[in-house]
Amino acid sequence: MSSDSTNTTTPVSISVSYNGKLVNEGDKMNPFQTIDQPRIFIDDSRSPGPTSYSVIMIDRNASRPFTTGPLLTYVHYWAVFSASNAASPARMVRTLAPYVQPAPHDLLLHKYEFLVYENSPFTTSPPANYLYNVGARYTTTLQNLISPLENPLGSTFFIEQL
Image (cartoon, rainbow, N blue to C red; front, side, top):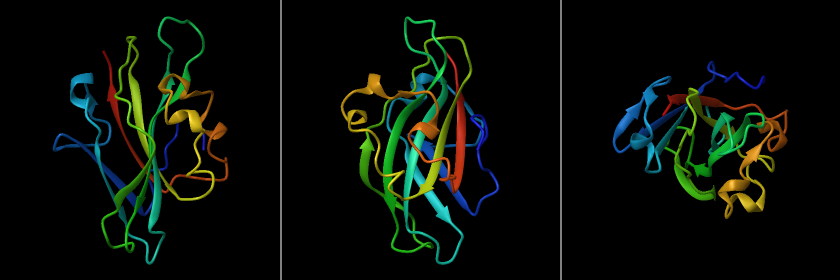
């Protein structure tokens, strides 16, 4: 998976809503619309398919406030979801990294991606400091945290700008 691609031809779909408003893939949002943690719905059309998922929300083009260094990937949210079977709605069962509201502080268009993974040791073990230090959630690429062998089962995204 390249740093800019998402897997859009998968049998697993993810839907995201903020305050009851469903976000369509590619919607342009503003920071006021994404203050609260989103509701996430996972639809797995495979049978039987896995019933436990990790969802990671990232911004691959994050810049650190008050610095001019390279753009990095920032992890905004990381949670484990489970369903009783592939036909049941998945529900959030554990937060691995609490939600951090998108807050672009530059004029770039930021693409906020929600990636769905099958649970594995790679997708259920973020660094411990992700739970407590939101400033430590920067990484050069997502593959520094997730094995390159782990491909997302599904994804969606929205765009946000100041």
